[in-house]
Picture (cartoon, rainbow, N blue to C red):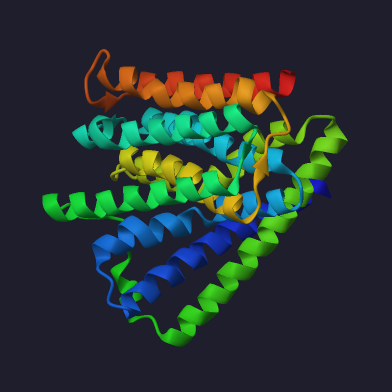
Length: 314
C-alpha cells in the first residue's frame, strides 16, 4: 500500500500543481497584472507548490529529513536527471545571463542553506524569513532586468485571460485539495516505505520523492526536446532550484522550523547538490563554450545515477 500511496500522491501533486498554475495565471489576468510579471512571479511560485506542500506536510508531521531531502534531492534531480536527459536528447545553448546572474544567485542560496544547517543544525523561523526576503529581492531584480532589457517571458498561456471567475474558483479548489491530499499520501507512503525496506526517510526523500516532484519538469523538457522545440532553458531550471531553497524551505521554516535529523544530509547530500550546481560552469565553457552537449548530458545523468546508487547502498 505504501507504493500505491506514493503513486497516487505523485498523480495528485501533478494534477494539483497544474490546476493551481492555471488558476493563478487566470486570476492574475483578472487583476490586470502584466504577462511579464505573471511569468516571473506567479508561475514560478505556483510551480513550486508541490515541493512546498510536501516539505510543509513533512515538517508539521515531524519528518524534517523529508522536508530537507525533498528540496536537496529535487535540486540534484533538476540538474542531473532533467538537464542530463534533456541535453542527451537535444543539446542546450547557454546565454550569458546564466553565468552572470542566475548561476551566482543559485550558488548563494545553496551556500546559505549549508551555512544555516552547519551552524545550527536547523532552519529557524528567522532564517526562513531571511530566505523569503532573499527570494523577494531576487524576483524584484528579475522584473527590473526584464523591463530594462525588454525580455519576452515565456510559459504564460494567454488564453487563460478569458477564463470566467467561476471556473477560476473551481480550479483553485481542485488544485488546493489535490495538492493537500497528494502531499499527505506521499509523505505517509514514503515513511511507511522507508520502514518496510529498511532505509532512512532521508534516502527515500532525496531519491523517490525528489524525482516525483521533478517529474513535471522532466516530462515537459523531454516532450519539447523530442519535438525539436525549444526545450526547458537552463535559466528556468536554475530558477527552479533557487525557488526550491528560498521559497519552499523559507515558507516551511517560517511556519515550522526545520531540524536536521540525519547528519548525512549535511555531510553527504548537500555536497552533491553543491557539486552538481558548481560543475555547470566548467561544463558550460569546456571544451565547447555556451553549450550543454549530449556527452555533457551523459556525464550529468551518470553522475545522478551514481548519487542514487550510493544513497541506497549506504
